[in-house]
Image (cartoon, rainbow, N blue to C red; front, side):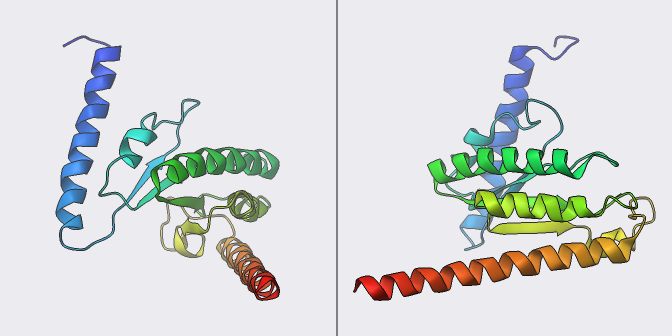
Length: 184
């Protein structure tokens, strides 16, 4: 075994993960369960590097990313990141006929940077992701080490962003229905 991370070691690691996920999601799939796999985004390469291989598994229904940001990152940079990763995720999930899922960070949010939560949510929604989650509940109020500085504001901003996205989705659905009625 080499001392460092070589191409063959990296290939072995990825292969092992794909094999494990195939086996474990296969067990759930035969019981009629849906499978969702979510990856952290940790570096420039995405930290996941084998999204296609995972998406290619027939037992995976949803593929998710957590492009969490560092405490204090600017909302504009966060929005840009969420636009980027949402596009990347949607391209892969569309190609493999999977559902895309994005997670929005609600923990360790610095005071006066709560708007970053909304920016991330809107970016993902505006790119076309409709399966958007946040972690953790109420700004991580119950997790002292990860607690946001102003948990109430984080929770309110996230709730408002989800509501606004839901309203947009309903409005778009009504518009599509009206268009379909007019063409019949």
